[in-house]
Image (cartoon, rainbow, N blue to C red; front, side):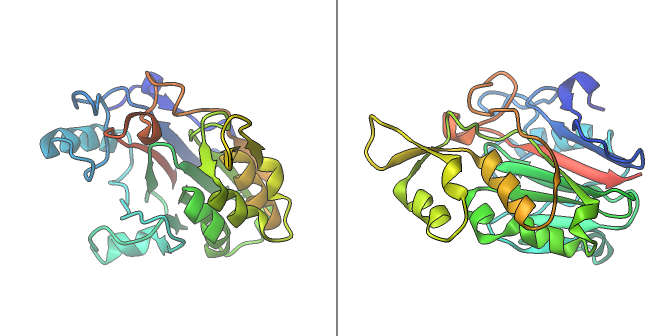
Length: 250
C-alpha cells in the first residue's frame, strides 16, 4: 500500500463519498530512469517491476483501476462498462462512472490530468489532456459524458508541465488562437526565440471548462518539469515513468 506522503490529495471541496489522489514518483520498485513508482507499462520499464508498482497502487484502491490506451484523442468510455465486459485496455483518453468502487484513472508525465466529480457524488471521471486532446475537446467530451448540468460538476487540475517550461511552436499558438476565443492570454512569446511561446496548459484547461459550463475548478499549481524529485517528466527526461490520477465513488 502506498503511503499518504507519496500521494497528492486534491484540494477540492468534493463530497466525502468521492475519493481521489495523484501518485508521485515515490513509493515504487522501479530503478533509474523509472525510479520509483512508474505505473506505465508502455515506457520500456521491467514488466515485473511495473506489476509490483501497480500492485502497491491496487492496495490503496477499492478495485483495480481502468487503464486506458491513451492516444491524445477525445474518446470517453464508461469505466464500469470496461470492467463488466472484461475488455483489454481500450483506446480512450477519459473515463467516467456512476458505479461505486470503480476507479477512473489516467497516466501522465507532463500532460494534464483532470479529475471530475458531481456535487451530489453520483458521478466521477478522469481525463488525460495533452495540448492536442485539450484543443480537440477531451474535457468538453468528458463533461458531456457525465450527463448532468455542468454547473453541478467540479474539476481538479493535477500536476502537469508548468507555464514557465511548456515551450510550444507557432502551430500550437495558431491552433488555439485562430478562433474567436480568448485563448491567446494563455501564451507568452519567448523574445529570444522566433515563433516560440510559453503555454499555460492550466489556463487553457480552465477556459475550456468554463466555456463548457464548469465553474468550480481547483488545482493547477504544480510543474512536473521543474520538480524533478517529485514528478516524472517526459519533456525533461525523455525516457521516464508515468504517474496516475485516480478518482472513484466510495
